[in-house]
Image (cartoon, rainbow over all chains, first blue to last red; front, side, top):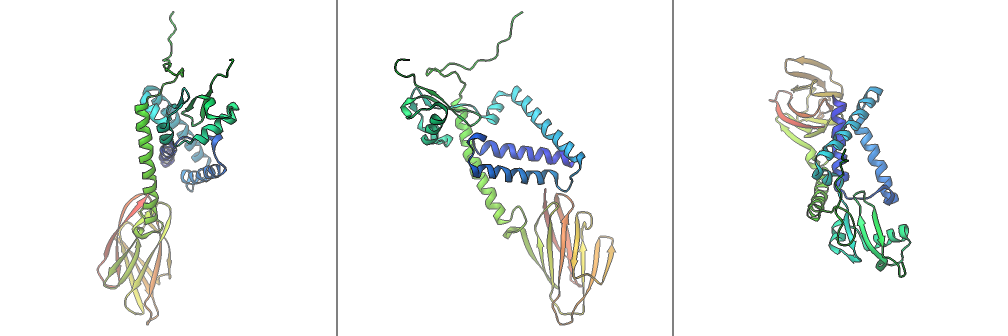
Length: 151
Length: 171
């Protein structure tokens, strides 16, 4: 019983903290954030297992974590609003070339980050070459370039 | 046979086909800001000792007629903490009586110095210690909580009436 309670408690704690700390994908992590993730993983492992390193405990914990994730996926399917709160939704940061400063501030995204995504993903040089920018639910920034003259 | 179509996101005026409920998003952003403050408050509370393991609020000093007791106020499950007793009078022997759930709610991992005698009582344990006659003796008990919850404990030094304390054991 204790293993199941530990598993569910840690699952909920991680879910709430990662959800409300903001969106950022693995690919956009800084080196320090990656190190932080490793430390969190190590801390979580100790809280999950306690003193019990048996295969039975590992089996119960893994099953609990997967079961919690499956239950959550069903809940998200039945309750779309709950899914939005849990997974987030895309936020338009640039629409038709117009920068939404309010959305940028609230999403804690800078113009520099959009320009970086534009250079990396689309090979764009300037902001005025971007037609739309969307902060996806996953935390990545999608860009749609303006059609070039002659296209 | 008709094929059921999934719900399609609307096409916006700027050409993007996506579902963005800005009203809900504003609430999510506000919730994120509130949660950032909550995270900061949790860190500050932990520094103050609310989560145990050090900090001003994690320990308490109890005064008895026969001495003082430095006891943990907040313990963590499966983590050991010291409870230190200082007898007020210099005497060749001292007695400590613990009334409460020991050994069920709290486990005594070690006692320094070792008691010369220990006796089980209906509601606790009594320890006798020999001491240098002129010294004000100090005894340290290393406690470990058996499970989360509240543990009430009575601590009696020598012939003084017991001092009651409640230890919060965090999961």
